[in-house]
Length: 202
Length: 316
Image 1 (cartoon, helix red, strand yellow):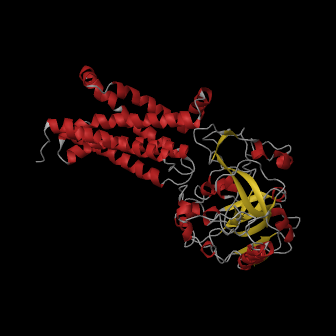
Image 2 (spheres, one colour):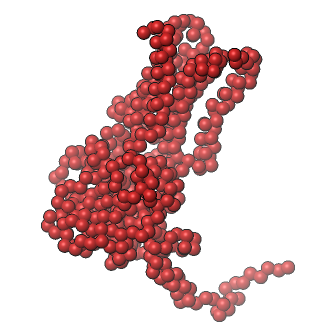
Image 3 (tube, chains in turn purple, red):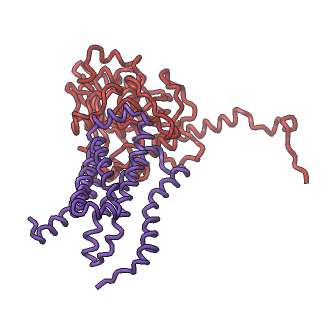
């Protein structure tokens, strides 16, 4: 049986290291901005990269449960909140790049875009749905909401599907990358269905 | 130790290379390259040598600031060399545009198959500085080297059935590896109505920035139609056909509700998925506001009459 690292190691080594690791993509992007390494269209690159990192962190967060079961390492659950908050962190930067470098804070135009463009509508919706999850991510809220917390946080599956849809409606012709992300999400969702079935919930 | 700095009066006249001699040298270089026109690769040219260093400017040249060469040649939509923006530049070495021939077919009196050199020989090349507006919402200002499409088409004497002109890109997945994946329905096809094609604005481009076209920009010969979205300006052309019916243009066939046959730049008609009101000018700092997109990309004076009485929302 794999053993769980001591609580102290988790709190003072693993979590800080993971925290910094999750900041790395942003660090690389910022570094690239200041060294003019984002190519001919830096605004598009920034929006694209932060969007993809949001999706990646979302999939990583959803992978925590299956991975901890497969590796028989229940302690991994202690890392999930941080990963989930990083989804929101990258989603916020993704939003900001759109509001700033695409729309230049033109509120009317942004509202029109959100209403009129399905891919922006679903992206915006996914972002909004993340907010209650962030607000209820504290230990106190988990205790207070009890079973409702679990129900509420099932929203993440809706968000994940919206995120994929957001990506899908953006693609012009080449779906290869999208298909990879989509398949990973399907796998993660099927795992959960399978688990439910085993428990006889169905 | 003293450093001797010669002033102009110190330099003997005999030391100065006479202008005629160095001009001759340039001329020699040019002729040498011209004789191997488009058969030579970039590697054979000294770094400083541009193939067409001083061309006459076209009458329609835009006064906008040029997009840097580096950007023009590293940010491309040329799915035949990969779907990422940087892919065409990365994969450029896989595409050798030599030898090259062009077939002219269809409703005309003088069809034929020509090698590239013969094909472009009749025309005086000029520099055309045109704005290029991509349907994705970005734009560039590019100094093309080329010649009038209309002048070229007239050589083949289109007949009265020629209502459209159709262009086709090379189909060869060994040279254009992107064609191994069916991202689009290869080969890429584009078309113009004959009166659009006969307008003085569209050109056949064989170069940019005074030099031959890099592979990623559609070597060795491409179309440039400055008042239409960039995808109409088909690259690496091997076939030109005069037709009576509207050509089946690739993007139009792929998603007719998103990419019209006309695809004139029009800030009033949005792409179903994004706005076309503004555009990001590549090469400008990304924190600077975008440009307002102009009707017909600012070429209305030359082309608006082509669409008189047409509903441009319907015929987008």
